[in-house]
Amino acid sequence: MNKNLWKIYKGAGTFYRNLIKKFRALFFQPTTEELKRLAYDKLPAPINWKKIAGDREIYVEIGSGHGEVLLANNGEKSISVGYEIKSRFFRLTQRKIRKHADIFIFKGSGYESLFLHYKDFSIDRLLILFPDPWHKRKHNKRRPLTAEFFKKIAQKLKTNGEIIIATDWPDYADFIKE
Image (cartoon, rainbow, N blue to C red; front, side):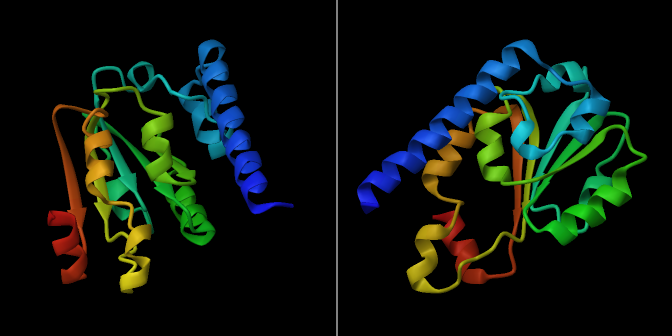
């Protein structure tokens, strides 16, 4: 298949998947229990987090790893939502949080989810702890934390919302500051 045709085909698939998610969100808003059982690709877009959280704050963590931060943020004043790509860490965190009604973990891209599953001005705190630095110069284009990303994410944060980023790569820290 021609490379350009493949790109169009692949892009159309993503477009239609996102359109179906938005259509599903009009008629289906999951309860807390249903949301815990749903797979990432079955989530409606956007999710009515206000209905689930009530007047509590919404904390989102991208790359939740072993789930320690999700559990530490657990409280009466907030709900925590985590995203993890690695299956092993996702399952580990899922086991740790199963008894907590106000902590959610999804196996999928948190960067993509921010724009699909959250309405504007809905996130109180975004945590991005130790993202993959893509330390080779030729891989810099794969880094998700760019100026464009921060412009887009500013719409999703509440007025006094905050972004917490931690990295152990000094070069990546400088890249993020720029």
